[in-house]
Length: 420
Image (cartoon, rainbow, N blue to C red; front, side, top):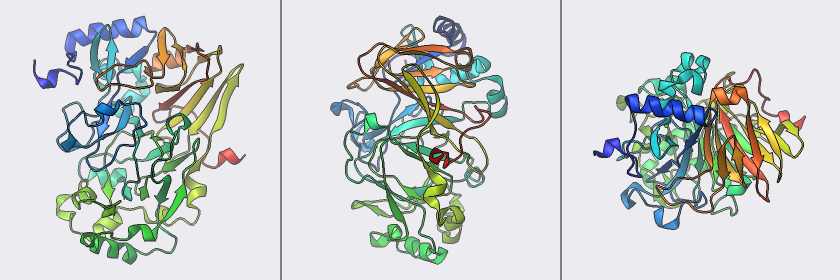
């Protein structure tokens, strides 16, 4: 059996008629819910923060040359843009009856049941994903291209968001601050000098930016083209289904950032064109004098009942569009609620144990690479709109995060509405 027919667990990946038959069984048996397997992604240029429950022996499970595993992706149909990647890296697998298949293939097989006809007709896929992003220290000041700029290399843009989940942040690690944007008054000539100084060690780009202290239980909305150097809190990141980026900082904690990571998603003929590289930034958003006011998020209660509360944790529009959103559901011990949403979502349990429909929910203390867990579920459009019962069967709060695709809601709160 070839490597490209099996997962990292060694199980065969179902396709064709075998997938069709098993998918119908899975959706019918679980009321439209799909159990997902952990989806681990390494980054060769980063240092794992070691808070995402992966066993210490498995941080370098892909090999030391690939770098440490510092990300876990949720509900993903997006490939990780890593050099030397394994063939399925970044893709989520569904698990049922001891067998596995791509979430991507399941959606293509039953799009209306799983993500809804409108989303499928518009995008032809599940166009978003989320992850835990967990590092020991800060990462380079970088941006993600706009949709227009990413299209120049056949990719899609990448707006993203942050939520600093308290349950996965028992320690700060090395630098719990994130540089964002550029100081008001910064000129393009200032930035150009940083690029010209790339090979001299630290190119000084952080001298042009300001750091914000990261607070557990809060978040940020980051439009494309905006520079940011994420700090060392473990971050839940709903975002567009793309892995484009450009690193504008040449040295981080003494580690070199190669020029190739600045220009990897730019046209090859522009790799030394400093003016082009600078123009990929949304300059006005970067030098915004009210950057925090326009991008910072705090939870907002969306609904509540006896023993439970559902809060918006990611909301707002990106360039006038509702591209993704996220909620945090908390149930006290013994509480139940019927979760009913207008669209599909991907769920990760971050505290406690209980059940969702007939599926057990259990927050793991430690996960071996290749092992299956009971903390992750894809809630199909069919299940979300019909309603699914969630129950806390433990002695502590049951907490789950779930994110949604574009235009899932008629309206979402605006950035800043937490102050009302």
